[in-house]
Length: 570
Image (cartoon, rainbow, N blue to C red; front, side, top):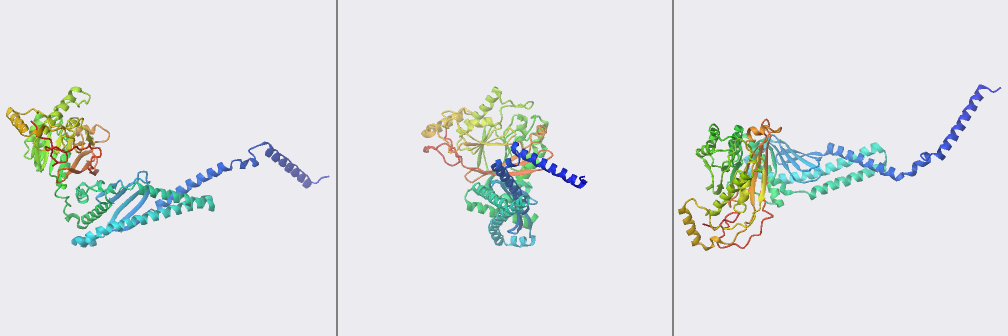
């Protein structure tokens, strides 16, 4: 008789033999069995390598976020510098409570933030009392900023590498993968640094975008005529920025406004007010803070051109600044007359005037369409606008002095002025645009121009007969005419409320140098109805790289302005 214990042993042996037979059969007949596992080692290595790369990058980003920040003394400031991943690169300089500057400094995948967080007020006041010491601080600040950026770059790189190594070591627990992760991150950081250096643009500091309190913008901007691409000038601009901000902080409210170069003539360009009462407050604030010399208005100051609307323009007299105006398609003769009654205003209607050394020519829009929008496809309206441009062009050609700025309402009329003056200002479209106008043919001195009276015609004929060179060969302008279309200073009025996002109030400051050339301009936008954001962006006017070749000057040519002066004609 077999004992129960031996019976259980026999059953266990039979089960073990059966299991061994089944496993052997599986290895022979199933290619996915244990012996088939090593068939795709390369694919497994590639997958593991990609996984290591992803984990290493994640660890690098964590390290950069945790360690990519440092502090640095910059002049009298205690500044915080940080590097963060970014698709667009760029640099931001935050100056609380004034706002910030945004610089298109580079295109690498790293964003540099410089925050001026604290200031030793007592020390700055002491330095402000001795301008020589403050000047030295501004010079030293450039070297201090360079030192801080270099230290930040090394610290960020070290934290990124350390973060990648730690995370890969924790996930894979392998020395080989950990070493590979370190090499990968070194390559990524090196390529980021190379991309930043290659795309670095020192001239970006000349064209910053300002955000924050508008009233403090003049104290930061400084002189608009500093135009150069050399590194030394870039360094000087940075020194001036630190100096001006230090003065602003150090003297707080008692600091007088930091004036631009007094030789620059500042022109404020506004357009399309459309009865917005809030627009006058913005115009007055900008005119006062920037010490504007002339205000030019390219039309549509009213909506319907009615007599009750005429009182809207009474604010012009209180501005106490020369105010040049051309009529828009929403402005009637009543509107133009109301503007003309203001003591400081001049209505230009095929007229040429000289104000503050600048010569302006302007003509009003020939249409009056207050009850409907103008139709750009309407051939009759198009002909009217083009004819107005032709009329003003004839006036400029007949002028005995070169015109610096032409004013029209609809930019369609500007094409007829290509080559006759260096700058044309317009509005109408409620959208900012800056472009160059190509003349269809070289500008020639005309043989005959319609005169206002027979006596004027006779006088012009005598002038032409006395000067044989008056009908000289066609001239090609040195540079193409610059057309600047302003946005709506009134935010399109009530029409601006029809869209889901209100239009911002737009206006521009134009800086003219002593030779009456446009050196730079500032685009200002104030958030539309219900918004409070203010943006100011500086633009340097670069020479026209596609300007036509200039022929040999004729005896009658004049070079006193940026574009050739038209010869006297009949």
